[in-house]
Each structure stands twice: as C-alpha cells, then as structure tokens.
Image: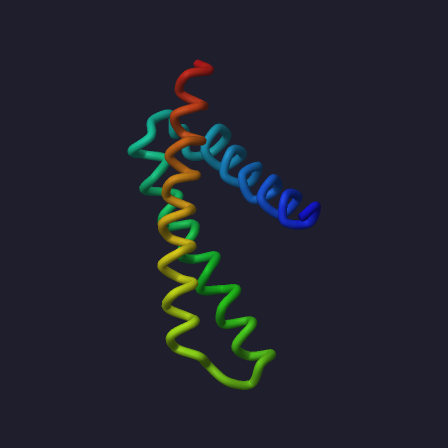
Length: 88
C-alpha cells in the first residue's frame, strides 16, 4: 500500500508542476482535458513497455487499462486544476 500511495503522490506532483509552472491551468475543465491527454500518453507508454517485456500484447487488458487511466487521470487533472485555481 505504501508504494501505491507513493506512486500516486508523485503522479499528482507531476500534474501539479506542469499545470502551475508551464500550462497555467486553473480550472477543472482545463485540468481534466490535459489530464486525459497526459493519462493516455502515460498509459500507452507503460502498456507498450509492459507488453514488450511480456513478449505478447493482450489487447483486452491494454484497452481496459487505457480507458481506466484516461478516466482517472482526467478526474485527477480536473481536481488539480480546480485546486490551483482556488489558490490564486
């Protein structure tokens, strides 16, 4: 559980750094849009990497993980954007 917590913590810190420093995102909608994009790109990267180490591509698992990552990252990105907007 500790490593899951730490993984989530560092993932949200990446979003916060990007949103506050470079993207100037301060709304839920803006945060959700970029969160969706970042989540899909990250999931694609990780799924291709994992598939290469497995030696095979499980399409159902790949697509399921991509959808879950897209939705959760969009929600997380929206919350981060909203939080940054309230701090300004």
